[in-house]
Length: 48
Image (cartoon, rainbow, N blue to C red; front, side, top):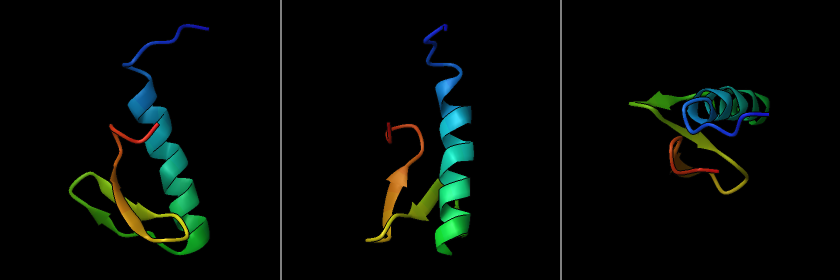
């Protein structure tokens, strides 16, 4: 597999959206998603 940084944000974005949808945090705020049990706001680019 090619470990490219270009592909990571898209995959992470989809992952976070799925997680957010499951847990009920489906709000989008300028590229940041609220997700997780604590409801922390994390950057999509920085979360890995």
